[in-house]
Amino acid sequence: MAIDEQASAVRKVRGWRVWLALLSAPASLAIAFGVVAALARGTLGLEGEALVAHLTAVAAVPTTLAFLAVLGLTWRLAGADGWSLAALGWTKPPRRDVGLALVAAPTLWLLHVFLVYPQLVKVQPAFDPSLRSQALGPLVMMLSAAIVAEDTLLRGYALRALTQRHGVTAAVCVTSVAGALVMPQPGWWLKLWALGLGLVLSLLRLASRSLWPVLVTHAALAVGPRLSGL
Image (cartoon, rainbow, N blue to C red; front, top):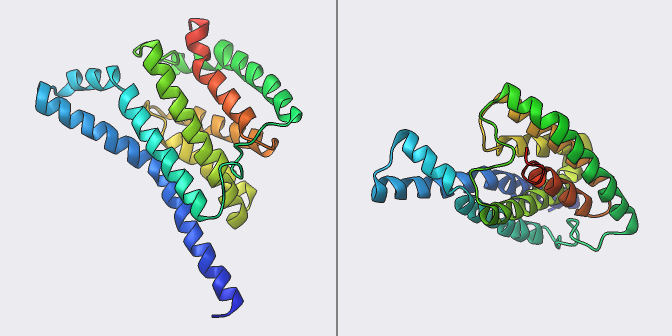
């Protein structure tokens, strides 16, 4: 086999891995919630609105398990491509990244809490940015798993892999759309907001040398409404 044919074969295999990783998030969430729903129907006899209310109340458990599965799969697929977690951005942040996080996180937190979230609630009344349906402990567990897995997958592995294959613009667009698709709450305004947030986090990752500014900013936006009493 010629060298260029060998390179093409490698690109195809690695491309298959990154697309599998991207599909793992919605697939894992669907499976986890499907199992919980089936158990609720079978053991509690819940249907309709009662089933939806039950899934909402226990959402932290299947969400956490699903994102832990996503994180594990991302780690394995990235390793198969020869990349360690450090290569994906899990490194000690340099001072520049610390400063970037200290500026980006509070700035976007204030913007969302006092402007973005109130507008989203107006156009999508069912949207609850503070996630009041979840107790604080399960909420922290769920958000920790979701943020770590999502940013490792989208802003770590997929952004790097797709940039090498298709360029940075395509990589930013694809990973941002993938993040919007796993937005749990319905509504086009929420999907557009999640898309915009994905673009911002991707650009923040490109401006940094580690994942930490992205993680800190993402966490601030996730817990900001609950802490502010929104």
